[in-house]
Amino acid sequence: MGQNQAERPVNTASRSSAYAPLMRIFGSSVADQAMLSGANLLIGLILIRYASETQYGYYVLAFNAMMLATTLQGTFINTPLVAMLPTMSDSTRSQWLGSLLHDQRRWAAGAALVSMVVTGIALVTGALPTEAGPICAAAIVLILAALYREYYRGILIMLRRPHPVLAADAVYVVGLIAGGLLATQSPWAATVALLSAAVSAVVGGTLLRRVLGDAVDHRAAPGRLRDIARTGIWAAAGGVIYWLFNQGYSFLTVMTLDVTAVAAVAAARLLLMPVNLLVTGVQKQLMPMAAGWLHEHGARKTLQRLSIFSLALGLGAAVYVAIAWLLRDWIFIDLMHKDFAQRDTLLALWSCIFLIMALREPAMLVSVMRQRFRILAATAGVCSVFALAVSYFCMQAYGAPGAPLGILAGEIAYFIVAIVLALVEVRRDARHDASQSPPSAAPRSASLSGNDSP
Image (cartoon, rainbow, N blue to C red; front, top):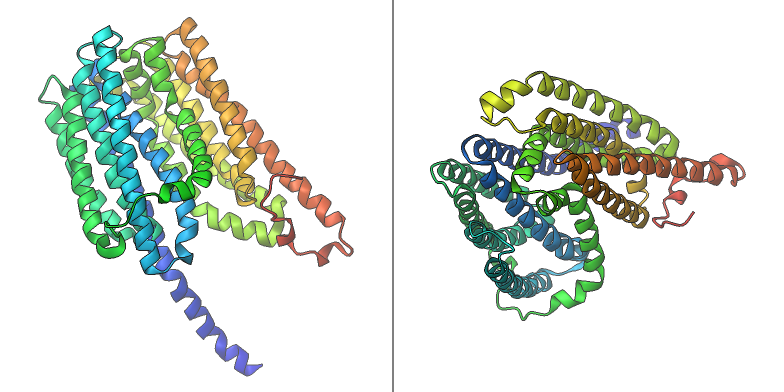
């Protein structure tokens, strides 16, 4: 007995030392995300204030297209690869990473060529205005540069080396902000900002490539992309659904209305991005905690605890929304130097959207930790299509506010389904416990099957 008691402090210390690297990785990841989100917010404010509404609208569209491309690459390659890397030797891993890099470059070059041809046809036929030509060219360059940077960035994240990523991202952010300031001196603000972001991405990607060194075999033969295609295509489909829900409205808005409407909708949304940063940061911290609660206490107590976090997040979001609403005249007129039509309506709708998101995200973790990915992906897909459909018809009737109005409808539907799915997990646990004799003899982990069937 005494010997066991004497060993406990040693075990606790060793456990703490084991968690220390994980906490450093987590802290670097959160700091990196905050830095990138803050830089994007600052660039948006700079361009809104000093550039025309049209130039800012084009910048939003181009940047959202870049986000779609990097999301596709990240989900298609990184999602299956992250599960495979731990089983590989160093030489095998280096060969795989080099082969995938060659495949990535080939597909990116092909997509860029197709994009340039389509852009040229659209300009000749008048489907795109002449002023959009340089912006589209700059957007293609940015997408290629961003894919280059994100490939190496994703590798280092998978290898749990966040500190070089943080350093390279800091260089990228400095270049991004400098480019945004430079863009304000030109009538072609969107083109200059996009090309500056491309240069910053190339510099950041090159730094990451040097850090990796021999970890990537640049002489490896291409072809490994086919080996992960079956898994990657489903992961990429989920990434597209996520993008549609969060960014697809901008392209629907420009097709339904015009590019200045995109600027008005995006400017109102930009004010609420700190709420998104708060929710994302808390969500990353909650995930490992929720996994432990679910394993030890089951779905009911986990949902109860997560509900407390939902209410706290909702309260924090509400406080920020209230402050932004009270300061809206100063923000739009004095800070942004823009007084968009229907800006108050747009701000109110985006506020409701982000409040619902803050309430929903913690509750969704019950289904996420039970690995109900198929039903979650299907739900997100249906809700995103529903949201875009409502946005289209509402924009026909109400103009720019119709875009966030449709997103609000989709978020409400997604919120309801997320709560229902969490309650289904609670009922599943109750049935599982009731089927045991005695009920306490069944381990909680038995219910963590990882499939979508009841």
